[in-house]
Image (cartoon, rainbow, N blue to C red; front, top):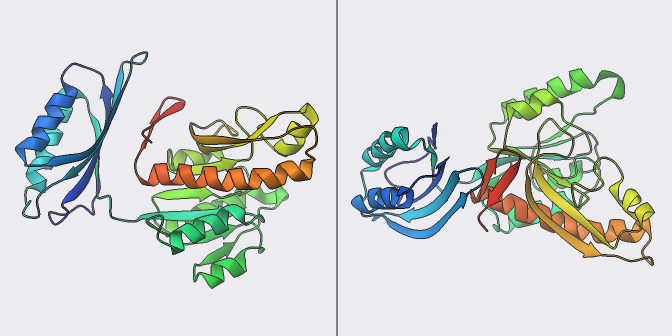
Length: 294
């Protein structure tokens, strides 16, 4: 299967190529020769072979000369060899911002961190809207001039609310949906509609303490480490492929409040790193895990 970015043009001199395929001898040489045939210069190269699965992953940032006008021919040749080599490939214009929908509930730390990074141009994204089941963060969206959708999720009528949520998401064509401490479990149909395009920050070091109130669970168990996990969302609760994790040390002197306070810093940093890895096309999903070129 091939996927191409319809915003690619011959005017783009920087192109990113990602490939996942069955492993075999000569893959790097074949792709490298194709790039060289078009006078392309590989300015960053990442590749990995999962020997247990027999699967190969590659990510190349390629720079062509400013006179490069043969994108269609390059794509055609890449498509031709992809059939023989069973390549799942994608060509991406790395300077094109990805459209990211943000979903939140009441806590602001992850949202504000992303908005700061966006505002200061640390991350190259467009934010078409913010969606929340509460009104708490509406003022922040207004200050940033971002449309804010308040969509309550009533316990007695969740299916209708999630149907409306799907409508809002579909109205704002997006490359990615970020659950920045959105405290509702998305229905299976939404998860299946956007595979590999929804990321969540969970406030524990998964797979430990999944579900609600993980800091309370950690406190009761007397753990010495708390953590946060950025992962893709699937139709299993907190079980999607993991992108990034980190920890903070705690001890018997730390209360639940202390753990929550320490955890907030870990959460926003882990989400920021996970988001950046996804935006830079450094994450490959394979079965239930990820290969991350960082």
